[in-house]
Image (cartoon, rainbow, N blue to C red):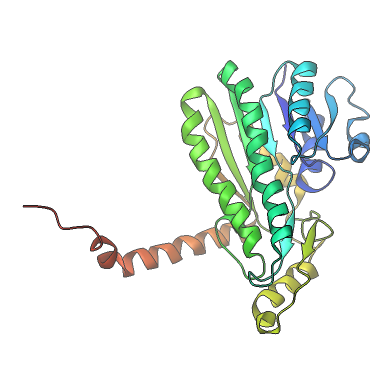
Length: 279
């Protein structure tokens, strides 16, 4: 039997494209969404290999039920894709705590709880692959999405540590870091801060406007991204981090150069912070 996938956030974007592509390639897929009516068309033609699962990743009971239903139907979970997530636009000073906390609950704590619930099944079989959908914004920050960046930095940090913990157990972890793709992330899925401070118009305000302005016209193709994600799950040595999109590649390279510059420029000061060795 081909691998069994559990994908969160399948009503739109990467999750939807990935579920459609994985089913088309013959995989068994638990297609999770907050409203299963949104994914009914995806599972309609795959009665044996698809399962629509009701899942809000902030609901612990639904998480447990989704994992149990997947295992009950397919017997195992080989690939977990933590895709469910939202965006939020606002300068750091403008951002509202309630919205920021909601975003962290979905993007970070929901992802973490899903992972914790699936890991015992993967550990028991000594195999599995976890794909955490992050962003180039988890490597490099941009004005106007600082708290969104913070959630994705958290995903990156958690995923990197997790990869070291589970590698000896036969489980792989990959951080998916896309740039601009034609998903709904910059559309209705992302809220704006209700507070607008004029001093940030040329930084946070401009970047927010740029992102909103090209929503639906981004260069990234979600279908090609889905094919790439499926491909790495069949690779013996998948990457810890998979960049998707030319802008993600460019941004990551720029971040590396920025780090190198600061590291080397201030190397003497950095090393000098250690106490002198005793003779």
